[in-house]
Length: 603
Image 1 (cartoon, rainbow, N blue to C red):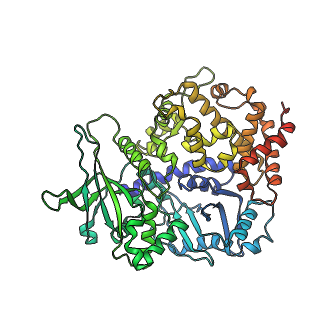
Image 2 (image 1 turned 135 degrees about the vertical axis):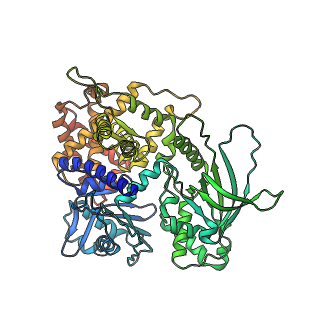
Image 3 (image 1 turned 90 degrees about the vertical axis):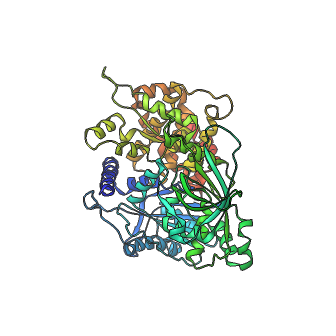
């Protein structure tokens, strides 16, 4: 019953926030998709197609896409928004329906060449068709994301094949998955995995002696685990094994996955797996350990509580896929490190924060093939913690002599705002919290980074997505968190960061009102950068903070710049993909050189 109530409360909060955005934009599907994408942790921010591509007669649909040309991986997103979903009925979706939705995106791929003849060249969908047509022979992997506001209760995998593509993955992102992600983001899962009882197998590890005295932060064990046991555990527990603050969703990437699978297929190479692969790093809260023999520092691991894979997700994904494909894992072993967290329950600091910090350090320094997002690794730096503290303590200036009523809310960890809401009783407690921290004043760390980078003249970096923007943002602000002597964040530093967000959000509102169609994110980033490039001396960030808005006198200027930006991006791209062109510094340099003169005397 408590789980059902939590689902209902979460869905209600989610839909209420969506309702507010839908009223402003006139669309439910786009804000829903954008909200879901913010949780999905992809290497590249997808381009949301406006309008989405839909051919009812041929049953083809795509709502967003991204193409990683370095790894030759294409991501396609299909949104399934059901207006009848509600917190009382918790409507579900079955595997057949999910497969049909995924097939809509597949048909876009298989019909890409003919679609080039029918799609308007000015639409982003044309760029997608062109990318597929030109890169089809090079694409290693296609990921189709079915994004739905229904509950995929069966959670059965959907198998799909596309001619000429080696790896095709279908992932379902439903409301339940987002709720689980947010919940697990805040704390280590406490589920107990009984290896001996559930899988009839254990593994042995050596305890690493700790010569230091005093309070211990952890116990460490090193050894190996059979690939089959690892695959079985992931097969049953799935994302619960990796849903931690420092997390990379288990997705087998094309090249690495192929190499691991080829190794596992070959009987001789299979036995060399432990020598070829970097293995996994894991953490747990407690475990059931049995000393193998007196005088020998070796233990049998019979079960673990809160077991999490913090590095090695790619290895785990590839082994699991081989397991599901029927490839023998006999005599295959994976080297492993296990850290048992020793968080002192008597210290006053928040337990979850201590665990986050420890796991962040473990993940950052572990030798691994797996990509760890910089935004996750650096979430616990003093810089991020100080920004969080400012946002919880600094009131937004009030008007007309009234006392301040609200604050900006900086999300240091994904989903933190919704968790904070759900910790409070529905009714007055939640209402008071939302009044103090309005939903439209919530800022994620990657949003803050993109806003900063756009204003500071790096629109091409913001166009690359949240991760790239965050890395550059942290690099430019290194004095606040790196090195032996660190600058202290002042109130004005915080206020100016928020002011940059206010400016970006105002530009977005104006671009939305203009209904330019196409490349909206790139237009916003470049328009903000040009506004700063030409008029920064006339825009005082502290004044923007104090007023909590950009003066209306800039509205018409922004409209002109935004309109010119879209024209420039399309024309200068030529035969290139506009989105990819916008990610290059040359695009920004050329924009300044060719358009500054025309736009510099608008006020």
